[in-house]
Image (cartoon, rainbow, N blue to C red; front, side):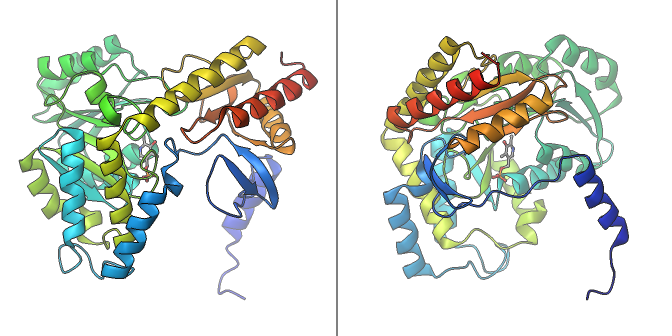
Length: 395
Ligand SMILES: *Cc1c(COP(=O)(O)O)cnc(C)c1O
């Protein structure tokens, strides 16, 4: 028996159940690969991971992690500012700066921590943050922690961004414009060239969260900033080590001054232990691989094109994605949930995404392609989409 029954939480959990939105977490019985063991069922085709390049199980990276454990142990032992800053951490930052073509990179324990810690450190009460309405939850939390004033512009609407700037910019000394680089629900790209121009015109700092762009877009996966040729014109370029890189961690690529400030004021670094040696070495090896070859990135895009074309031919609506993120828009929320459930029964796992994560009436399943998928696996998935789509009268 616990001290409190937590009646208020009990009631809220019951409400989730009554609303039909209570969920039980699916359980993987092995590695996160293109075919997984899910809830005890083997050979389920995985179309839901952020593991774009298949690096979560990359052999070179696994070896690097094992070697690092042998040499450095399993934990960093302290926060970085006391005695948890290892040479491999510094080396990872050097590699990331080279990869991102920026002066410096500052590493956090996750992409979430990176946003929460960086935004809070670089803005303060009395500053203005202007944010795209579809930005990631960790950006929203970072903005709250900063206590700066916040204004939202309509998703990727440059006229609306300029309106916000005209109405507010003069009232503040410091202003930061924040956007995701790739929006994860639709797979569309931020209009970075236009955002940068407006930021320069109105003297604002710029911040791009490229969690879904790094490893995917740009030369050898350098990200959306590289894709648009905007190096040196964006102040803070965020990436994660947990998506295409396949491990865990986050980083901000920035200039020397920003690096120095963050190492004194980024709270997740001051008050939380740094990445483990295994994570650090595996992520570093991932960057080594990306600097050597673009074969994984090429295969990822090839798979995405292959899969989108096949679904399109069957009559599915795959939206306006510009990236390997492939939404299959179903419409009604209940239909999207049912479609996802039936796909799973038939051995294909894609998560349903519905209101309020996406607008009402645009319920969908979201397919995440990977370089590791084989054509055979994608063909199997497409056959299941066809079968279930026809059963439900969707195509
Ligand atoms: C996934 C994601 C994050 C969080 O990254 P983690 O490394 O998983 O904590 C932050 N921002 C965006 C846009 C993301 O998609």
